[in-house]
Image (cartoon, rainbow, N blue to C red; front, side, top):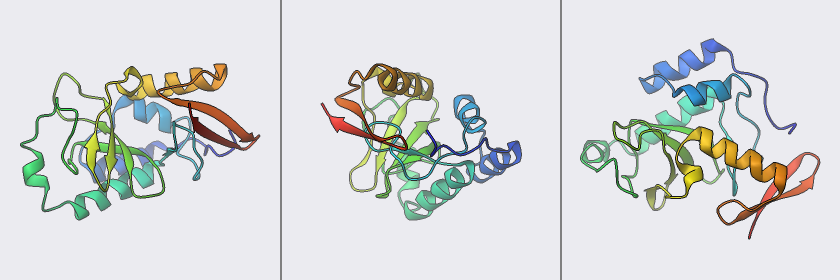
Length: 171
């Protein structure tokens, strides 16, 4: 896909880690070292675009600022629950939808650490039980398989708009 950017520099990844105050998860680092984000094109179902290392840091900072008053209560929420707080400092955004929402990797200490959440700016964060949302590798592998086979994924089927654009339709 032409929308994917060239690899990130390790210095850009280190700068993002400094901003978020923790190492980025290894699967995210591996992904950034292949493609440092992308333009606003739908890659992950149904409408998510990958963030660059710099945009990961900016997005995390923005959410920390917006939800500063909520953060102390966020620590009290059960990290095993299917619904999280509005934001948590240990969530790493890695994809966006262009409408203020992010996919995050949950880095809170729990048996479900590494799972993917949908941090919606209107409803808070939710974590789907579908296996593709269990981790970034699971999401990327499931997406690649769906793109290769055309098979639907969690209710969405890939649809090539043209050679440069992908969309996902409700199945």
